[in-house]
Length: 304
Image 1 (cartoon, rainbow, N blue to C red):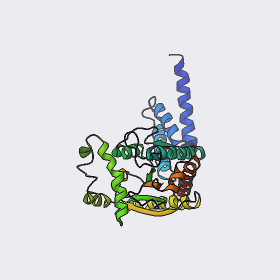
Image 2: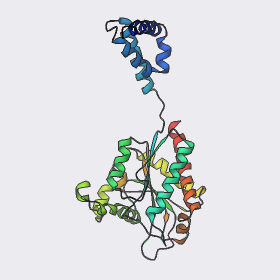
Image 3: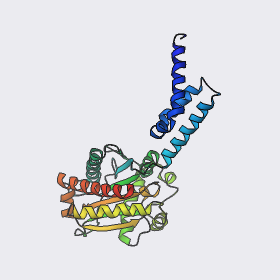
Image 4: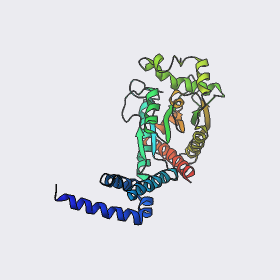
């Protein structure tokens, strides 16, 4: 250890000289790295004014680099609706939970392939049941920049001609059909243990409860609508499917997300054309590509 001390002191002196002469250059390029180096050196020279000045400049450069850094989308959460004991809507020989998982996986693969620097987080990767409140919690804990929930729709009774995609954002529903979609999606909480405790007594069967839910003001509504519009545009132009537009309703899974969030209803499993499309590999790929194209457009607009 005694033999190593002169080398350490020499390195320290050289670093002091280096910092005093070229600090501006090194701090603006790698302030976090050099701040750690200087703090290590400061142990040997606790009263050195040069070291103190160097620390201050590094701290200022680090703060400036953080404040002036341009916004970049870094994390995206993909939420395949339903799962496990919650099968979602049913088609002829298909289940919503399976179809949306395939679309979410394909979408995530596209994002990671084109933007490897973006972290893609899945609320589920397999056929498991994930409570709605945990899906939002996953996104919030990750501090995600965007939340995309993927679903399939259905129309009860003899309304088999109803078809097309709809992308929802959090807000007050203006049509009864929007309310019915929200009620059906929110009813998944009935499969959870202690759902009354988890959602503060919220009753998914109550119209009044849904109205109250839909009045929740999402701070990211403008960005959510911006992305939702891009999704519907791409589903129509790229996948060649009918778009029913962007809509608002009170969804539990969107209520507590602290970032721009949408719920994409990719089509109606009760419609023969939509079901055939969504149940095919080609259709699932085209739907994933449509949402990805919307993401790419949204990313450019947000980062410019």
